[in-house]
Image (tube, rainbow over all chains, first blue to last red; front, top):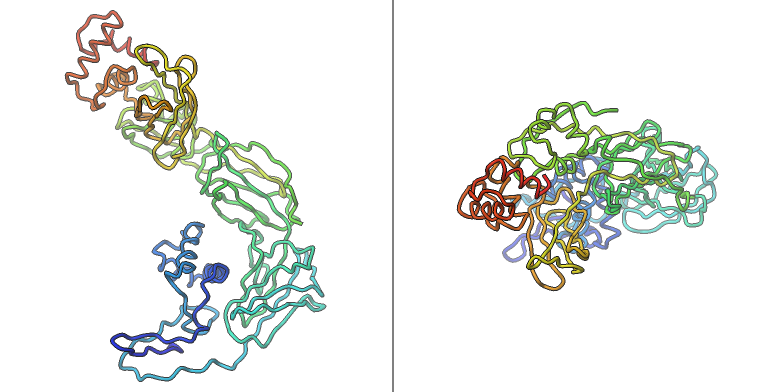
Length: 286
Length: 216
């Protein structure tokens, strides 16, 4: 059952919700919402259903952009109908007219928690450094890691998804890679470098910072970018499949210890693509 | 590692081996030279001249795997995404030299191609192999020509004869495969220019002359 109630006002029923339940529709907030949905298999299905696409199509940047644009434009607004849960579909508000009307339930005074440990790819911590955590209700908190490179908060007001951002005062910080209670289960590569990672409340997370970066560019025989070409990239026996972007570029983020990666353009025959040149990156991600 | 799986493709109007290679992530050589297409090679003798209904065996792309050094930028080139396009532009028999042109293409590869004709009135360009239609417009506003790309039927078909006569500037009706009065008139004009018996019929001598004049 929803926390909010439908109320007959005039000829129509309205869902009355407090302002804080309506998620902001600024680009950063909406992008976080969509990114969060993509992390959850159930939410991915809901998102795909809303957009009228297959779940697999959510990998297409244009599809994600359409979801973001729909909400940032105000055409659609996201309203939190139930407190965030670790998994499962959100419960839609009831519109059953026979159900007795109830007054709004005041926001819970219960607090939730989160624990974050940040390490590099070799397991070394970042003790004493400061990072930023944006909580589910939008507040920014400074995360100062203790001697175990861990930070814990037990006084978060809202359950949901928080975002940890790279600490600007941490020169060795590279790309945040994993958010998991079990690092070994998380893939070691990403095709989209990210400056923040989503973290659910009510859980302990280990975030891994990596610095390795390899770029793959696909051009046509006239030297122009070939976008939207699928490429399988394998690092440390872990494979990810991504498409080249509008510039024909695919960025692979991986542990610095990786000395080689394997790439395969899955829809092109071996004769149809040749390696033209390999050049050092302008910066090594450090 | 060689591709082993094959898929059969039945040619539609406007397709040639180059356009199929671009569409299926392969190369002209890999498709045309495949053993499974030996019969087609013997029949058509030219990868640019296919007839609707021809069957082409296309190697299924399995993707070539590349082992790359980490920490670098690796630039790949896709092969055979463009084909050569050449047209000679004349006016009253004289070349239209040094005239700016724009080639507008259909489909996804819609970026227009611009350039200037050379001293002999020749336009040379590299066009996306998947493009089906091109329209040439001139900077001086004189003339606008539409071309169907990659659609040249074999010489033993009426549509193949019409296509060649059209490219030679002697036939201006639709390439429809029907031998009507416009086709006969164009054949008579071509035969007269070549000093052949003027019959209006596509006899062997006329077809041989057409092959020589058009180039294939």
